Structures are given as structure tokens and as C-alpha cells.
Image (cartoon, rainbow, N blue to C red; front, side, top):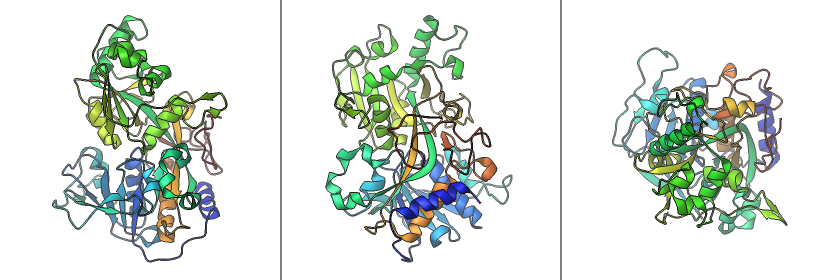
Length: 459
């Protein structure tokens, strides 16, 4: 039916034989927080397609936001006979590899420990409570809060980048284990953006209006692309590299803005296991990719909380934590998050800025955050991968079948039964062409069938 799925299936079976039926009904996923919302909605779609409805279990008491630890239970079996998907994004993308055996465990939601009862979701969780059988009817009371978390091993998961871009993290796993880790294409591209705090957004906007880079008619705080201020690739690289004495770090916010402001500038970075962090290091600093005799790659600032007075690093475990860091209205703060996030849609006060003069968002409450990525004018793009390891028994055949099915649903064109995935888009392959799906399939790609986020974007 879909050539994309056929290609994905062939890619998945080529690296190792299936581990065999083991009767599991739970899939434990770890990995990227940048695609968390899309993974959860993909599972929900698979459950609905199987004739069931979902119940969402989550750590924390909020009914309007995602958390690092969530679980999705389907009332009927999905692919592989699995009914429960426990999804943790704590630590980020590369926990999809690190947590695949007992050397490093992660936490998962214990669905039998929750203090809350089912209620309708609001905010970010509202789409999960829509009844697919009656979309205009009453919302489903299917969000269960107050759940405890417990240690466990991962069955694999999705990552913003392939593990080879962070080789320093995997020495403890052993050569044999790493040799058996498969990096599979998800056929999905992902846009990342540079987010800034409200205070920095207004300061950048005022300076760039004064300099004639933005129309003087733009109102303060205007978020439409024409009125968004811009940071350059060099600005961000200087902010996140390990040179403690460059102008951005010693000059504070004024050096970033181009003014006399001396306030501290805050870098809301992710932890080293984060794919968002690895993506930023690859894109802005050339990590691993620029490794010739001439060098070229620049190390990143330390993975720690640091305060030099004019420059501060705040270490964050997940995308949600970065957004909280950027929401501090007293700081001149900068951080990288995926374009799956949208501040207007989530009633927050941080904002995306343009990168080298190109916006990743339409500046509306219901954007796609992928138009410029799809047409190739925006370049901070990575291609999502899947990490599994059947040879060492980390990923059973049932789990792999459902992982494959989830990958097939990520950013699927609406015309093919998908949903409008913010910040994600399809990568062209035999099943999808840009001309057939110009609003959801990219004109450019990096690795395609062979994941390689070091490769340049090509049409």
C-alpha cells in the first residue's frame, strides 16, 4: 500500500534476524524528547486504527502538558500484539541506545501507581482526548495523572541523530553490544529552531528595528516572520562553543544583541545524551563531521551548570526543561528546541527567532513549523533514526514490529491518513514525492535510506 513502509520493513529486517515471539504486550521506548508529541499521537493513531481507544498515564498532575515519563495504553492489541507503550524522554535521544540493557536504566511510568482518575486533556493534551468516532462530541476522560516512575530497560527508540555522532558516550556499553546496535531510517526529517526568552526577543527586535533590519512599523513582540529578529549561525556557535573568552561570553547579552547591555546571557543547553544537543553541536560546531587532518570541529561548552557572571549555562534534561528555562522573563536566554514546539500554541512567553534571516515558523497559533524546511530555504534540519538491538535481545520481535509501525506513522501525509505533524516532514523515497505532497514531503534530504546527518542537504 505504501512503498515507504515496504522500504522501512526491508531496512529493518536486513540487519539481524528477529528474536522470535516472546509474548510481550508492553513496548518500553526511550529517546528523543523532540519528537515526543508525534510519537504519542502516532501510537494513538495505531490504536484507533485497530479499533481501540487510548488511556494516557503520566507523571505529574498537569492535564495540559506532556511530561518526561508517559504511557499510552490501547484497549485492543496493536502491531505485535502490544497494548501498552511506556515512553520516557528523560535524558534525550541517545538513551534509546544507552538504556537498552542493565548497564544504564531509565525510568518508566508505573500505570498501577497513579493517584489521579481519568479526565479530559487540555492544552497540548487536548488532541489526545478527542474521540475519533465522534470528533465533535464530548472529549474522552482518558488522561490519568499522578503516576509514579520505576527503573527499567528500554526496547529501543527514536533519536534525532545516529549514535555515531556521540561516540564518547558509548565506551561503557562494550564493542560487542555497540556492533549489534542497528541504526534504521525513520524517513522523517525534523526542523530545529533557536528559541529565546521574551526579554531577549524584545531586545533583539528593538535593535534590529533601529538598524533597519526589521520594519519600524513592527509592534514590540510581533511574532510574524517579517517582524521576527534574527540570530546568525556564528552567534549561536559562539554562544555554545567551549571558548570561555569570546565576545558573547565576556560581553554578556550586549554582545549578542549588539548594544551596551551588560546583563548576563543564559545558554539553556541540553545534557550530552540529548539528540537536540547533538544536533546543535553537529550543525553549529561540526561535531564528528568535520574530522579531517585540518580539523574544523569545535568543542561545545561543558555539560554542567556554569556561571561566569556575564555568561551562564543551565543544564536541562529534556525539551520541557529547556522551555521552562527560556520562559524566565528576567533572563536574556537562548536554547535550541525542535520545531515540534510552538510557544503561541502552548501559551508560553519564549519565542523562536530567525536563523540567518530565515524563520522556521509561520508565527501563528496553529503553525506547521516546516514550510521553510520543506522548501529547502531553512537549513537547521536533521533526519530521525530508530535504534534497535535484537541480536543482544534488547528488542524483541513484537517490540520491533510496533516500533516499525510507529515509524511509519510519523509525519505521514494527511492524505495518507496521517495528522499535521508540527516540525516534522516526510523524506522523499519511492512512496512519496514532493510534487504529490508539497506541504508535507521535503525537497531536500541528507541520508535517505542510509542515515547520515553529516551529509549536506541535497535536492
